[in-house]
Image 1: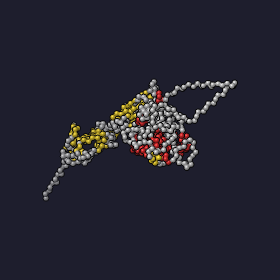
Image 2: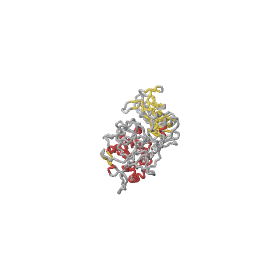
Image 3: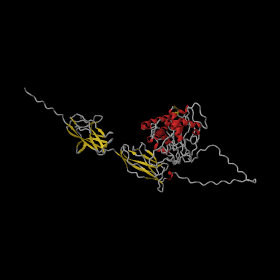
Image 4: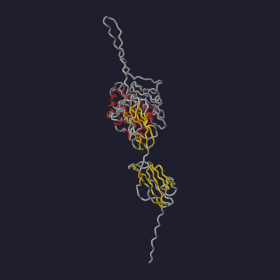
Length: 574
């Protein structure tokens, strides 16, 4: 969790020869080589850029400080050290039992829900080590909730990112500024959309290792990243905390844990000691009255200025103090100049279930005077649980940087199977401004034509069963109409579509007579094969009507007739 402006003082292991050797030894083949938007996120637009503007909300952690301790070196003779050496000893391979269980369960869940991500649990362990020292050595209760909250420093822009309060202090106890929270160090604004319920208790708690580990896994797997690919792995880690030093430290622990770990009792894990901001990382509870803090400074005493030489003639004089220089005005960041969002020509958002929307949400960030603002992050969020629509890549949240025209265009929307309306909400990351809401609509899949796949006559004797099953194919505008809802009813006549009370019928699972089948669906090829038909003792011609969403209708004739009696062979006389 390190800010990306190069203004933070860095102490500890990353400044030592051992640290340098460890990074070289453990991650030389894993050096970052990614092309991302600076936050590991997708961008759109020819001029889209990723220049950060100081709010730090383009990462899971707000780019807060992290532990820089490195795993033990596999070196028979330790290298000479300067300052605090990297961690040593097999104890470093021990992971507290509950924390380890949370990592493995999160990875198992992701292997089922996002198998293409290939998330190793060791990656969660590496990030958990670097973010919180495995929840402060496994200081969690039986349910996996930290016994005391783990909080990062106040993100007030004073040596860190500047993130004003977004949660009313609900997660971090600070109603003025945000702070990274919990064993995986999510900032509240990220947890708002990325939070997960990993232990099934109905709550999304960033202080619970099961919830936090699953949220971290989902966060790392967004944008269809494949973490078995080194470039995607680097992108995912950098999106968690945008720092090359952070990337190398996480990769070092990932490699170390992959070589073998073991379980240790909760509360007995090895605690790291070196932080990227020079602190000990011991903050575990909010201050009673949050106030801006100042970055740590080295303990080296300031040099004593030389005493002025007396003037010739033997007298003494008092040096004239130098007046302070003029205070230069602070240039606002692009985000700070944004006054409002404007629509940028978004068309009607409609799509059939399962299809990609033809229009994309596009907004423009503007100053109060209406001037476009480039290099501002805009967040697009699919709101609510009434839809299963996503953006391309399967995510419900996307962050895009505005281009030179101040425009941000969301990734394409992909409709799910749920029909109806939903909201796409656009907000400016790092600002509390009124967003824009867009209503999108998903309509049911449709068919406009139904035909039988066979022209065989459908006949049966009274009390018997039809030899052939009815199969139809649905199309829409000439293309296969898959997953289209259909209903099949045995009707009284061509002019009376009410259900017949005699003649052919279907059977339900218990063998009961059924003359209407609802909730039918065509398959991937647009085909629908009905169950077997049976006949009662009534003879005649009957009608089976099949209808689909979209208005396609097909009526099929069914004939029930007694078997023809063979004529007797004529007799002959000799």
